[in-house]
Length: 316
Image (cartoon, rainbow, N blue to C red; front, side, top):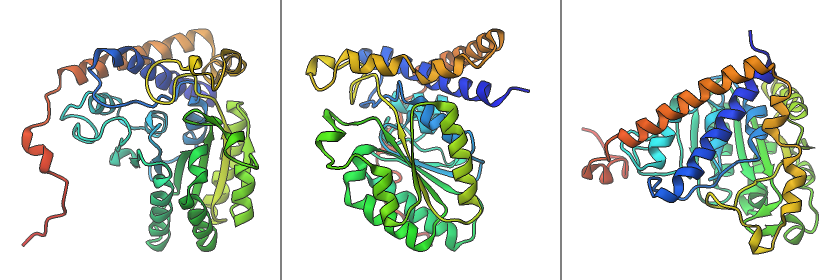
């Protein structure tokens, strides 16, 4: 049986390679939507989702591929969605920023900063009201913590003691502006705690985050109310797109190199036996090639698909 490190490595490698292929394909115009890549940040989604059960629900931001895949989202459907094909997870109409896989309980990602926080909080309230099993997990970036919905949702979650884990993927930049130039006090976990949501800041060590996340999620499952984890990470690519943006001057190659030395995928790779690692990588490469072939060979959505799923129609 594969251990936790091996399982997480397989997930992290799968996410990394999927996004590297997206970056490779993007300039060909086969991908029909903007993409926000999580290359460098994979450890957060992998460590958190390793503790989730099928009936747990995930919401995420527009930087959505990692959370979608780590929760069990269909890779073929994700690739087809990026290609704008009718077999995509949203029938080719949503693109990279609005992934959904109800079978895996990935109930939506959103292009509008902060909206996932409110959606997840509302869903957690419905979950609690209906006495449904499972918890809700909401991934968002540090920039979203500056939106009003962040404070409103933290307060409501604390007030109602909702079964929700807020996960702030703090990569320190809202597009091109460093956190220190946007926030007088760079302590997102502290702000949530002040509102009444117990919170913790965790660094870039994947196994440490896995341990902290496990204990945190168990508290939520036990009925102890909401929690927030502020997870420090770093994106290697530009804010949106497949390239690098160091020429813009808001960060430097040296800044990135510090994080690359502690790369989350490499961290996990060092914990896995070489033979097992190679077998896992081979499986991922085969799956990824098949997903890209599926996306390329899938049909475009029919013209009348444009008007479907727009309005709720009354039957009878």
